[in-house]
Structures are given as C-alpha cells and as structure tokens.
Length: 231
Image 1 (tube, one colour):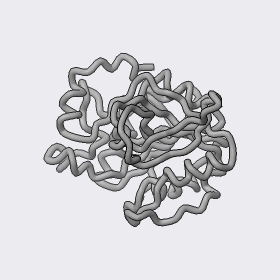
Image 2 (image 1 turned 60 degrees about the vertical axis):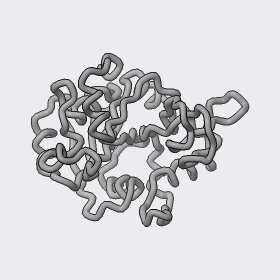
Image 3 (image 1 turned 45 degrees about the horizontal axis):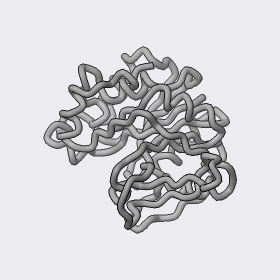
C-alpha cells in the first residue's frame, strides 16, 4: 500500500528553528519528526510519496539514507495551495487501490495507524477538551463508528473528536473535484466530506497523538512518552 506524507509547509510557527531546517526534519528525542512518522507506518505500507517544497533537498537527502521503506519518491508542490492540492499532485505516483495520507508534522501511534489502514476508508480522530479549536469529527449516532460530518472549529464548547490529519482513502479520491476554500486553498477536508457522503467512512479513535505546531510543543516533545509512536 502507498502512503503519502504532506511535508511541504514552511513551519513559520517554529521559527527560528525552521530557518535552515524543514519542520519535518526537526529532531525529537534524537530522531527527525519524519523518521518517527515513517517508523510508525503499518507494515503493509511498501511505497512512500512525500510532498515537499520548503528546503526540499534536505528531505530528499534524509529519505535517501533512511532504512524504513526502500521504495520512495518526492513530489514538489510548486505553489503551496492547501492540503487538497498537495494530495492531488501525488495522483500520477500512486499505484495502490487504497492510500494512507498523513500530516508531516504530527506524531501518530503505530497501533492507531494500523487500525486505520485496515479500513476501506476513514479518518483518525483524537479526543480534545475544546471543540472550537479544532476540526471536529462527529460520528453517526447509530453506534456504527461511521462519520456523520466534519466541521472546522465549530462554535461550541466542550470535548470532541479532533481531526488529526491521518486518513485512509480509496484510489477514487483523485476523482473528486475540489473547490477553492475561503482561504483560497484546496482543502483535503473537502475530499473527506464528499467521500463520507458517498459511502461508509470510518472514524478510528486514536490513543496517541502529538502535534508539533509550535516551538513550545516541539520542546515539550523532547521529554514526552513516545512509546506508542514505535511499531
């Protein structure tokens, strides 16, 4: 199975640390973020496509020396226009019927990714305390663990399941026509919403998730328990 890792971001919230190093290569407990992600991929993943832009040559050099997955390629997102655009530039490089898609700046639980990869289509979601800060995944009320809807930072308080940027898609995701969002970007969440409306789309609740979006989060990760991120 192919996996796509979205690693084209500028990492502006992690400056000055990302002035000379792309965010996916920032070290966490002695290993690049990207190395943690690739190391946690399910065993059925045998091909890797990494979307790059900022300091792309450094990511190429890392991939050439890593030993997790032998077959890999990078795809340049020439003009960053959102996660949906990053996904679709991978279309010519995908060979499998299903594909795992992950953010390149979050750490995921290896067992969680394995459970996600076992589904025909779905999303990984993690419990959070404050719904309005996240993209929120709402499962159907029938107890089926299928997704009802996905809302971006809803105006409500209380706990929720957050979209943490990990998806399993059928190959047909590339047939979905995306439209420009209010941010003037193509959003991967639009593809998620359309797939969920077209057929069963599973919600897999994650047991581990470590987003590294700020300097403070990156520093905290240096002492965090990362045992679940290991396969």
